[in-house]
Structures are given as C-alpha cells and as structure tokens.
Image: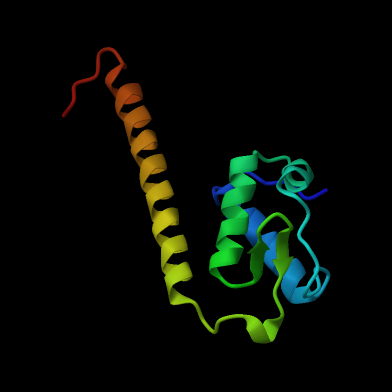
Length: 123
C-alpha cells in the first residue's frame, strides 16, 4: 500500500507523482480506468479531496481523461498534448502558495515562542 509521506511535499502532489510513474511505466496501461476516488483514497490513506486534486493534475497534464459517468481513463501517449506549460505553471503556483502559508505559520510560531521567554531583552 502506497502512503503519503510527511516529506513537506503536499500529499496530492505525491499521489500524482506515484500515479504518473505507474502510467509512464505501463502498469496503468492506456485505456485502463484509474481506480475510483474512494479506492485511491483508501490506497493512499488520503482524503477524497486530496485524491481529486491529484487526479486533476494528471488531467491537466493530459495523462488521463474523464468520461462522464464512466470514470477516469489513462490516455494513449499519442493523444496526449505535448508539453503542457499551463499545467506546470499551475502546479508551481499551488506549491508556492502552499509553502507561503506554511512558512507564515512557522514564522508565527517562532515569534510567539521567542517573545515568551522571561528576562530576555529584545535587542
């Protein structure tokens, strides 16, 4: 069972990376459906929203395609759009946003922990 690890890389990116490797390696062959969102959530021990974000990234990259009422399928390599800069840019922006939020929290924790020490001047 693949698990999302606490590496600092967002879970949805880890799941997208893992599925991408399976698609590019051929263990998820063109035309085959991805497991359902619920199955993937269980497989990766992640929330449904995290799994949906991961699949969304693969959709943007053109690796998979959704078919209404049927599921999400692996696309044939020759049907995939060549280098999708928009998807890469969107992923980078999301990662930067995520890191900014986390950095702000860390800075806030540092500020409150250093200001609580008695007998220290702030010079």
